[in-house]
Image (cartoon, rainbow, N blue to C red; front, side, top):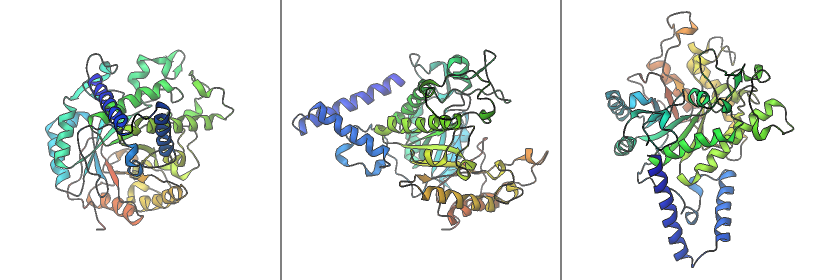
Length: 407
């Protein structure tokens, strides 16, 4: 599959190049390179794909599918297994019966596997799972239903790649290091890891996904306490005269900029999931996330602001019990940070539609239903944020929610 898609991409570029030569009376290679460089620079300086001049769009890949960007993206999360069962049909019906309009679908999931089957000659064959057996048919169905498709790609949390290539991971006593959940991470300092993930993103873009959402764009939690204990390469960053925190921040930010540059010809938005607390501090020192620097290099920033994932914060003793207040306070901070940027991205936070019994030592005291989900959306809307994504790991979403409560 990957080979077929890349062939189509090169054919498209070749044909458009011929048309360009005919219409422009044989533009020189040097002139063409200059124009492409200008396009790259415009993207790096914050010019969005909607603003790129028509004369500079001839290298944009066309999947043959057409999706209109919604008035505001309001989406739900879908796993690979869900996308392959009757539950997917039920969720399409759920979206169509509400003001929801988008789906975030796992393409590379949390352990590093692809959720679709690829050809045997693909470098990703050994990590592919046959959940989505016909991704083109799936996207054609979403096109027909008018549901905006977003591909989720988990980047640096990748047990599969770490075990296959320990040299791309972090080792402890000669073995691949894993956290207390048995999960391994690969090394954000290494460009080979960047390319591995961006090539998967290109595959998703060629299929017809309109937005590539990168998740786990970071080092492992608590890395600052292990950075001197673990064995790993700093690659091109080893000789930089920077403290370890700034090296991590630069590596993570550079990956995001690299991904956006590589994906520009596919005419997709690039979005990144980020811890909500990263917006409240200059930067998260261990994981390498700097909210402002990442935001400068994406089309969409998706802060994960689940009330259950905050401890006492913003003066709120138990955020899980006060979803409206937590989101309201967060939005104030995010708006201030994004307001300082010359070309801020679209804000599209992740909100909560699940219980957190672990916070209560057993059964969850706060049940997340209609009132709790609507409270989060209302707080976003009141702060000027109209886009959001709803997370439930089991893909079970609350019925009866008004997803546009201020309309």
